[in-house]
Image 1: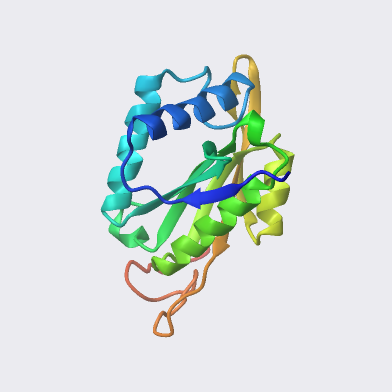
Image 2 (image 1 turned 135 degrees about the vertical axis):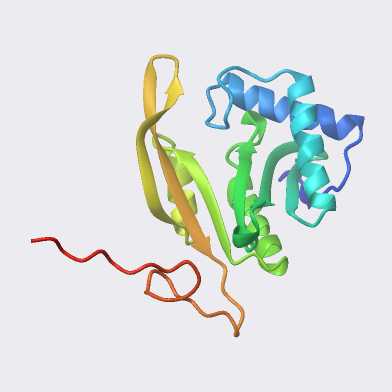
Length: 199
């Protein structure tokens, strides 16, 4: 029988949620998952991360989504609005991962699609994320969902004596009808002229 998969968007964490999120983070990191930890995090560290994330959710600046498989948390994902006022319509995607026991169920795609929909409803115009250069499966998924690579910092992610690229990706979720897209054209606030060529 196929497992029952549900998505939840919690705004607060009880003891069970904190424990199950910790198990996901810990077990993914233990297998070398590219989620920002050199060693499996202790529970106080994941509890602190979760409380900070849920505080942002309650403030309207984030959405935290968990995937339940037969009632247990097996995957997580978050988008968080950037704090700087000039980036208020931009959000970073963080901590998208599936527990080893939940792999092969399409949870990554399910979570990312839900995160994209949630961010769009919240008025986010651009989603950005970082991914380790050797995480080809994740990069392929993000590309299939419409993300494009906009930058790469070569060999800056340190895992013991190995170095990996930090791949930066982004997805436009659309803009309101009154938004003027200036890109890098001259003019507007903060504009400066090009320097004249010197002979």
